[in-house]
Image (spheres, rainbow, N blue to C red):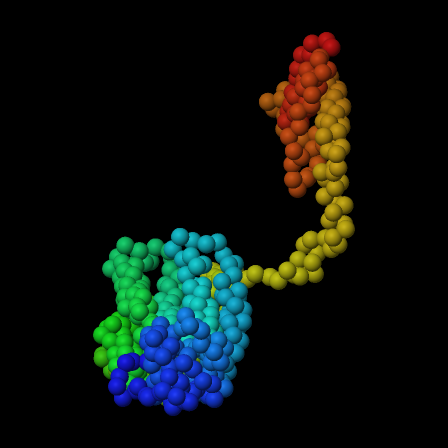
Length: 510
């Protein structure tokens, strides 16, 4: 609705008489218009403080009812202009962000997959947060850019500020997790080399809380506000008196400083990780060179881009004509300063994610390399898997032969218990034969057991070798036969251990 200003008010077009006026060759009752407090403004809009309609071109109404309602009218809030440069470039950026969303999902699957057991100190969720924030940034950008074509500018700016906030969180999580990954590699050979309760560990505990505190302060300063004043840009005076003061108020300025503190916190986290997990250099100049040398190349790109996000948000808080909140803003400044840094942050992360391996796989490879180095120091040479086959250390057999051998050893099938019982009876029969041989030796004048060599009877049962013991088996109780079977088994075991011992007394008659 236009601002009430004498310079904006126009006189009614002359009609057929003093109570008649004309809009687009359509006559209206001037007395009725004045009764409902309608006023004609210089931008050819008709408004009474509640309703606002267009009166120019093909949009004038065709009829006015006595109750002040127009027929076939076009509201001032309708989008009547074609998609301009701002909307066209916004659609192109929205498509690019949508494509980025697909590649971020691929990287999330690759780096979020777990190949090692999760530990309390390093949760898999920690390395996924940077990709979660990437999804948030892409979603906010796509919604804001597509709705900026035909929907009020408020929704476009609302999601733009969310996108800026998510971009800073993405860079933070990337830097924080890199420090966590360095710590994980550092303590993997010796878990007790770094304590979690020391100054270093407590600093790493409180730093994320400090970062997100200022990030949420930025959120509460920018997002929860009266966005309706931003829409009031239908003429020069309305923009100057209402929209511009609202878009450059003190809350937007303070929010910029909160975002700057977040960026400084990211730099502090980077300095802390290099200081504790990389070799230290002596001298201020060497430390500065080492700081840049130990920093991964992706952070050399991400940190300046994140600073550009902060700088442009601060520029918008002071210069309204460069802000996305202005309808006819400088389109080049808006997309180069407002959307391009965030888009480049996403793609630096995507390309880096495709080049880096999964961290669990990388850690497994490091453990294997450390094991090989220890074996070389000890003089242990591990032969390849084919070495035993070539030198005859193990029989060459196929999978079918292995299965058949396992079946023969265990018995297989539902008759396993029956096979175990048959094996016990066989051993009892062989023990009887061993006892008979022992009696013949004593009858031949053999020496007492104390003077004889203890040796195992040459029986089939004593030469049996199985890779796995059969499952424990307890035959069902069936009266005296069960007792007799137990006595026979004990006799068989005694005969195997002491083949030349005196025979035990006969068991109770069955």
